[in-house]
Image (cartoon, rainbow, N blue to C red; front, side):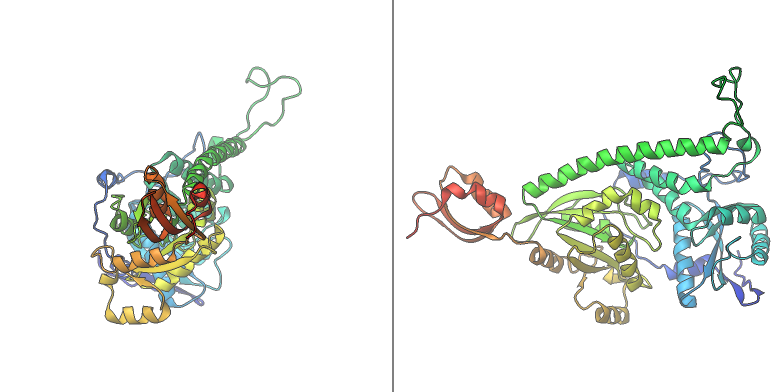
Length: 489
């Protein structure tokens, strides 16, 4: 398709066209190349079927129309910031759309004081966008924002194609990538919460249920206008939401039990968090040989992965890989994934991974910190880790070093800086706070091993009666060593 520039003016509002190549240039991220897993081939083999009809039809059950994104036009409203910021937001939306399996044909941004309350872009611009959609042969329009039910309905009436907002697009990506039972339940809960206020009816969906015994009603005292189909759907969705919340609460209890078990064993926990596609899973593979899925795609990781690791001194700790964040992460997802994100809030140390090759790494940091505040994880000690330094220019490195003087610089692809990162993790892990001086009999080698594993050995010497150790341990291990105090002198 030839590159065209479309200039649509009405007052102060302007639509600017961006090509797919320009979108990709703004998101020139380096691909991750590590072990991956069988899920990579399986996921890559699934492709959406082209040519499916997107005509709105009556839905007999819950009116959640599965997204079938094929050929899309992106539309954004630029209300604040610079033109570069607006184009960067559209570029990220393009990456999201491509991750969902679609082909981006055009990207249009409109300058407005605020989104139009009725059609998001204004009635005149909606008509002009309809002409662009017809000319390009697109079957879906994706808006860079969360549309109200009224805006969604009005836009579809004008554009004559399916309209999807940023929230629904992210939910669709999550639904494609969820693999575990907990992940699938969390995504379904978020979808239900998003869908509930957006139910609409047409055709038989607006008809009333009949009363009376003949129609299966309750007889005298129950006859009346009856529920509409939409009211029935809403009631079913609310019931399903309640059931999902109970299931997720049960899974959260099991996760809390696992965390408490690690706490009893005094194993420090380190959580890996950051923007989506920043290289978190690649870093986990490098540090622990975890072998988790690595893919140059947004939201490739949804289910948390916990692996054991060791400091250079041999002290054990856990590393947890978590779901990536994104600007304007839908609040339904934050709410649904709260039990999973508690792994971050309960950690002793947070590795905040930043994609150094991204055009706006500081913007990524701010977006992640907003979500961390939402899940009560802002107080967790944080280490900024700038990844993909091998894809950065010297000028970009110098500029970012001024903004992040305490950051650790690594490349999960080449392995550069990983030893320095391990040293930083070892220095930032919580230290045991109870000093002990014990004489352990030789048949209690299990306690000697625990002191080495969970404590900090200061001195150690072998005597005739056993192993004498001066160490710093936690309260639980100190209690186990209580009966082995070394004699004075």
